[in-house]
Amino acid sequence: MAVGPNNPRISLSPEALIKLFSDLQSTSKNVCQLLKFAEDLSPKQKDVGNHLKKFIRQRDDIKLQKFMRFCTGSVLIVTHSNFLEFQDMTAFTRRPVGHMWRYSANS
Image: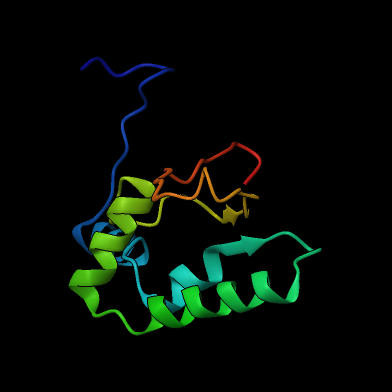
């Protein structure tokens, strides 16, 4: 790969690279801090949010990585926040649906 204005050479010491990688590791505390909810949640929605945080805190490292891979596609923390929103569903539309968390440049 050519070095130029679009591809500057990045030089990191092994210690700096290890620190960078460790800062990106998923921990239950970091993942819970990433979760963002709407301001106007109903009491039931707040309760579900609390259960989700409790679920995340109870995961060991391997299961937390699997959870992150399922939700974000990466085991590393690659965003500043993850906004969760609730969808109103009728009895007909209630079924398991998985959606990837979306990232935006504004996050």
